[in-house]
Length: 106
Image (tube, rainbow, N blue to C red; front, side, top):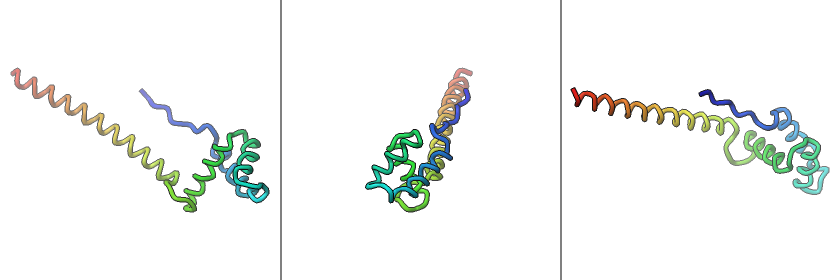
């Protein structure tokens, strides 16, 4: 069984453009919320989605506390590896028990 790779709902170019537009046009709006609403409607995403993109861009740039995209990807990769190793260990335990039982019968 092959797992399909996760494909983000929005292309990276759109996310980068949204962040850039927010940064360039923030001063033209009364608040961040107003800017998110105005820009998101032009991009075809929700204001909350745009807000999340901007917050993640700030984390990636070291301007905001939290995990960067690279750190999140590495954690996901390590969690997958741990899952696979646990499955392999479980298979080995079952095989070991099977062969130990088979030797007792002999």
